[in-house]
Length: 167
Picture 1 (tube, rainbow, N blue to C red):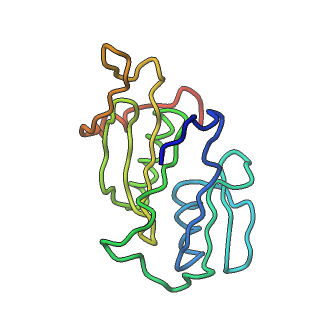
Picture 2 (picture 1 turned 135 degrees about the vertical axis):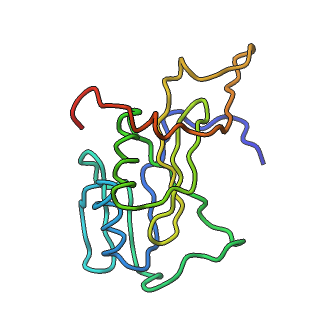
């Protein structure tokens, strides 16, 4: 059923909380590879990680999943969580981190409004790492509607991106 009025435009997604099989392995990926900082840990059962000192962007727990396996193909659940980077240079840094850790990409796309890397975490949870182009650069129809598409992302060009300031 459609709402008669739109949601408040200030609403955003505060965090994602994932079930994982092995907390240490998950922390090795989210902190060790992607570079999130551990903010809180509850033994071997749960941990919270963030960027920039926020209380948590990602929660990880083994409450119902210790030693478990990813959901089978063809089942419902999370398709992917999207982590937005502030600019192209930060996304390039993420790609370098993934390559150095030997983490394979499942895909990479230019969507016109954004550039994205697709992968799975060690528990098979889908992740999209992306940055949004400035709104003024988004492709639009003559009527002003946003045009999104999926074209191959030039990974070499992304890797050639250098930060304006030290990350």
